[in-house]
Every structure is written in structure tokens, then in C-alpha cells.
Image 1 (cartoon, rainbow, N blue to C red):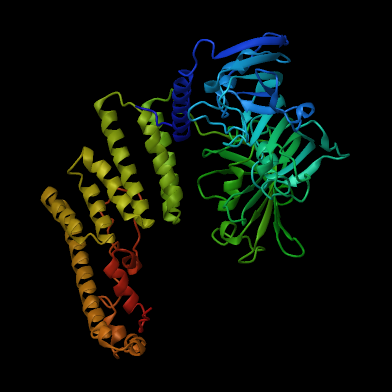
Image 2: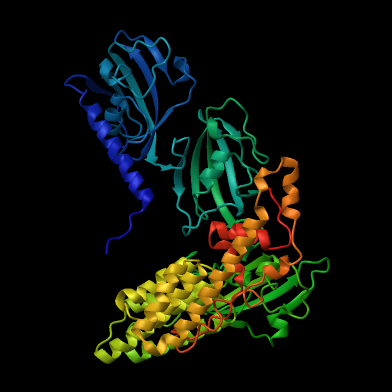
Length: 627
């Protein structure tokens, strides 16, 4: 099976290939004698710059007669700022591309370049200074001050990082994290502009409390890492904590990332916030209980009222015993479980949770009022991963399947369809690695897999995703086109989705395949017929109500929607005097799932098809508003 390609990796590889091709094309301009080097002072060691290294160097350009035309050095009229280029990444003169990788740190050399190797190159990526003699041979005196492996933070290389000391782990600060760091800053000429403070800086990541470029660089650092972050003027934004005087082309920030506190906005809207107050053991997120697991936690729950009332504490109210629960089974509030899944063993976090992710959709403790915002202080003591099926025999595997399936059925009956579906799908994924050894095992395996697919289809129906329900039934029918239970389930999905002709075909096919299914098929066909008649009657009513609507003047339009007959309420009833229930009684001998799909009201019809939406908008009440 082919592995899916990473789009970012593919894009990076494509850009690199294009860059390499462009450089090879540029190299054709190099001819014998067009670039010559003379060493003035030897350098240190044996290491030379390679692709990806940032090279910091001074450069003075002279004519062959010795006249200085440009320089980075202040004594030669320059600003005193050295150049900073990344080999293979920065836009550079062709002579620099060839010459810099030949030099050692501290070396000074003179390069004589023909015009086609400096600013007179066709399509030169670097613009020549004003009044620059670009059409003559020139001498470039270069001194390598330093070079190192660079971390490119911004694509335009306006923010680049040099690692001095590696950090711990690989987690880096992100938005809302609370960061503690030592920070100093120098101008490009080495002058100190931000000295070392008595205490480290404390700031919230993503709140623009420090310059943008500095924050981008810190966002690539691990705990305890030391680094120099080079930031150009376009990234030196105004900030509340660190003010950099104007006029600096570039600033070098030296940073030691002391610590950061993980703060996560779990929903992205600021309502469910997880704040880590004590680090756990292991690497985030690899060592978190991301999969369904048996979890052991201590927690204290508080109401976010003025008194901050404690409504439960496992250490006081549970005889000091921790809470044990299996994730993925709906045994704790949704916000509670979402956050625990992102905790490390030994970690303590404070969770601020809104009512809809706390107890408004979960069994509420007696001392928690409806609509209450709560806070949990949770300590994850440990967790046990689910049993690995490797090495189990077929019967043991089927026993494990039955346990998971039973849990899924319970969740379905409780109306937790997403969680139930996840349980069924978990087993189906594991089935990809199960190999029955004989015909009997093969039959048991196939029946179990089909039942699980149809359970998933039932979940999709209850979630209103009828197309996905149809697709899931087709997975069974692809292998067994005469699977009556799958055809019945698919027919119900078609009917719920408003695909009446497809539904009728499936119900009629049931009768031709299995005479014993005829009562169920006929019952479904009768419901389908009633539903069609019901819709036709209401279409007639809608046409009657809107008849002549567009013949009226604009001022009279609103009146058309307000007219109703005395028997409007009576007409809007289904043939049986109430909204039909297409699902009612659908599970009998024909059902393939272990849980019944309970009756569902007609409310789904308003989503089925455009005309249906207009119809139900018209008779949903006695009046019709025209916008």
C-alpha cells in the first residue's frame, strides 16, 4: 500500500529542485578566469560553510585600481553591519555562491570577479547599489566572521535562529502558552540595546507582548534551549514588554527559554481552557492517553461562582480513592475527557469548562446547578493502554470484540452515537490484522464484520448523515449483494435522505431475495407511500398559498404570507394525524444490528431537498414570512 505523501514535504522538495536547477543554469556563466581567489589571512580549523549554513561576513568592494566603491565596514564609509547570507537559500551574487563555501572562519580573501559573476549577471537576483560600476572587473575583499547551521524561521529569512545549547524535549511554545525567558539584544554592529534584566521576562505567547520576529523564533525553541535569533526590521513590531529603538536594520536577540506553561484552547473559542500547573513525565503528546485507555485520576471540581464552591473532591468524597474510568465510553463529561487525553502521567492541570461540555449534557451532581461553569483540578496518576491483540487466538480476539461491541451498544442506547461509532470502527480497524484459520472462523469473522458495518450505518442514520450510512451499507453489499439486512438498512437510509425511488428498489429487492422479509419490506413500502402522499399534499397547499404572490405589489407581499384558512393546522398533519415516523418498527427480524434504531420524527425532512425546505418553511407554522 502506497504511503500518502506529506504535501509540505512535497512542496519543499519541489522548491529545492527548482532552486538547484536555477543554480546549475547560473553556473554556466562561470568561465576560466572569471572568478579568482587570493588569500590575505588564513582561517581557523578545517570546517567550511555548506548548504543551510548562515555566513556572517564583512565585504569591501574595490575597482582593480584600488578605489573603494562599497563596503560594510564603517571605516570605509559603510554602516558597520556585516552581511548575513544562508548558503543555498539567500539571494546572492554568483561569485559569493562559489566563493563563500571555500573559506574558513576568520579567513580574509580577495576575490576578483568578472562582471557576469557579480551585478552584471543576466537576471541577477541582487540589485546593484546606485551608481555602481557593475560592468567592470571588481575586487571583493571578504572576511568570514562566523558561520553556523541556521534554522530558517520565516520564509523570507527575516527571522533566523542559531542554536547555542540544545533544549529538553521537542515541545515548543504555542499560542496562549505562558513563557519565562532571559532575553538580551544587540544591534547588528554588536552594540548592546537591551541589557540583561534582574528577572526573566514573563509573557503570554501569541498576545504580541514581544516583537513579532522574536516571538516567532521563541516558538521554535524547546525548554532550556539557548539561541540567538536574528530579526530584521520588518519583524521588529511594537510591543508592550520589549521596546526596540527605531532605525535598526537588524537586531540579534540572545534568548534562554527557562520554562513555559502549557495552556490550550481546546475548542478554539476560549471557552474550554486547559492550563498545566505541574509537568508530567514523558514526551508530549506521545506519552499521553490519546487512545481509549483505563485512566486513574484525582480531581477536585469547583463552581465558578463568587464562593468558588467545591462540589466534589476524590480525596475527600471518595475515601481518598482516585476515579477510574475508561475513556471513549462517555463515563465523564466531554470537556473532562478531552483534556485528560492530553495530559502526561503525573501532570496536574486546571480546566475551565463551559456548561455544554460539563454537566448540562451529562448526569449532573445534585449540588451543581444547571448552566454552571465549572473548574476541575485534575491529576493524572496513570493509565493502562488497551490490550494488544498480538498473540491472541481467534476465540480470545472475538471475546475482546464482544466486550467492545457491548460497550458500543450501550453508548448507542444512551444516544451517544459518535462514541458508539468510534467503538465499532475501532474493532473494524483491528480486523484488518485478523486472519481466520478455517472456514468456521471465516464465517464467524465475516458475520461479525458485517454486523459492525451495519451498526456504524445505524449510527450515521441517527447522526443525520444518511449518505454515509448508504456508503457503509454498500461495504457489506459489495461482498454479499444479497445481504437482506444490509439492503433493508440502506433502504431506510435512502428514505430518510429523500431518495424515494432508490428506497423503493431496495424494499422490493428484499421481497424477491427472501420471502421471510416480505412483512418488513411491505411495512417499509407502506411508510414510504404515506410519506410521499404527505409531501404531495403539502406541496399542493404551498402552491395554493403562494398562488398569485408575484402578481401583487411590493407592499402587499407580506399579506400573502399571513393569509391562512381555518383548517391550516389540520391540513399540516400527516395522513395519520401526526408526523410520520419512517424509522418506527424498522428493527424486527430483519435488523442486523444489536441495537434498535428508535423512532425519529419528521424534522429531518426539512433538510432533505431544496423544495422540501421551502415547503416546511411554509407550513411549519400558520404563517409564512417572505424575505
